[in-house]
Image 1 (tube, rainbow, N blue to C red):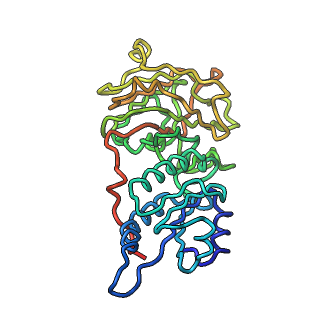
Image 2 (tube, rainbow, N blue to C red):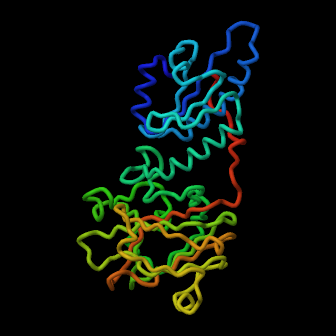
Image 3 (cartoon, rainbow, N blue to C red):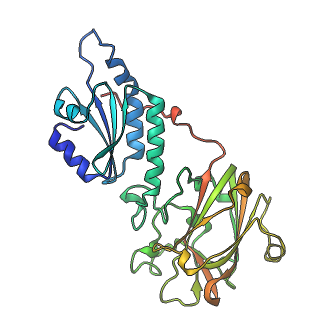
Length: 326
């Protein structure tokens, strides 16, 4: 709640994106004005969106009592209640007047996409503003890694001294990005190959998904020249079980990828665009690292993120009320 114009101005300066709800509280008597009903109607939705999308110093949701702050209402031309204002870098970019849930949801969906693409995950942990992201998520899509059936994943030629396959799909910041922890961490949160520089990963999904982008994070330790990043990757879809290496070598992949040094960003992540038309109905994915870079003896993968659309979308209209009306 913004209790003064000074506090509101401070909020605008401290956060890149601000969503402001300008409303007048309902009178605490038996008679309710017509304009007050919409304020109470949309309050639970606004509260839920605020709790799910707020990010420290990045995205802030504020409520402004226009009775107590007429100067704010006048400055931003608030003539109907409630009015929702979207600020970006302290400037109004969108105004929604009246309780219009459909329009509010549309704007917030666009905001959610922008939050994903701001790259707030670069160099930050999940506890510092949401899940870690090694690269921006393409506009209009989302991380569908939570659709992976972890218990049925299978990784062939994995080094037993590295972490289990489930570490690939965690949303925490890779320990290798924290100096001094790349090799010293007790619970190794990456996987690497064993006998040679090849890996075969079988990934089943809970339902059919549409895959748009594959993000691979690989952060080899600087003091280990014999471990490198993937260079040649083959993808196969909709297999009922994992392939063996001979079969993978002899089978035409759904998509073949060759990564170059410049494809990896500062966080060790390669953002790979998939041939979207071929991945429209994906129930399983096989990722075959056929070759590592620089002829090293082993390859390493720290994180995998699968970007696209889940088979069953979670409609924002089904969000449940959180907390009490103010």
